[in-house]
Image: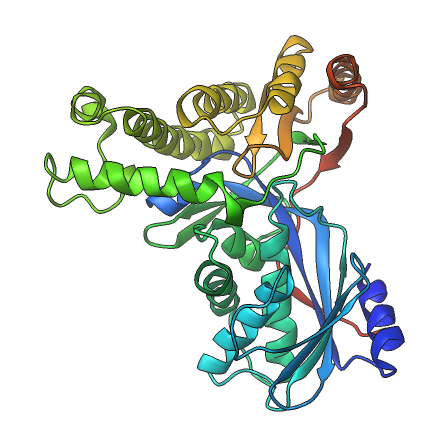
Length: 386
């Protein structure tokens, strides 16, 4: 895959790329819609990656191509907001420029990868983190992984307008193989947690556009909930900071749908911190039960599921999976399924669960979902230029 980006650069621009970098997609094990509410999340990076190959260009000009659309875009990154995926890279360059770490003479960029777009696997973060690494390297700047995550977050949040949290960019930059990463989003504190389970990723094929719709609406609802709850707790800044023992008081203070949104966030915050403890102890059965609880809360309280996601989770439960839930905000995208750990016979259970999910999905929708094994992988890295 890394060679595809270099080959695309060469065929498009007639020259060899100077640098290349890649970053992973991710699945969030648990902690849905807690990130932008100041709570914890527990993602793992995927083996699926996006690679950005880059070389010098014309001063002030960003030239870009992607193997997904095959077109060449030429933009002045300082002016306005370009359309589509180009806006993410333009935002990265603006953020690098603010730090004095952007290429002085413009840049040419080619993008290739296998992180599905719109599947809830953080394809935009994989793109922005990889672009930040490649373009900073092209400029001769040495930035830390946390700096790259911050640049990528601001590019998506401030320049593209997706009201996301810091999770996707943080895991793309800081991930370790074989580990999940507990991220406390209010403080940006992180802790690597060993992951010993066997995980399936089920892509329903239903795509979503987070910048255009429900994610921004949900965030506005959460902010409205915080504004009301400050009458009860004036020092409250993050919705996730509301004490879980005060849920009855929260329910009395909020009308619908703010009440349901807030109950989900507060409950999911407690579930996620407990889940990290269970994972560290290797207690996968109880961990899996929390995944099912999380999905039900997303479906019923946060109303961010979809029929296809619910079908997969129900089929996984009937087939004996330890846990399953939507991942990547919802409204389409993917489901993670925990089939077991390293015990004898887990491979047979994995095959049985996958077959059951395919049968149930085909019965309802006339097609089978894509199912792959998901193994916790590494974060951003520089790649050789082919």
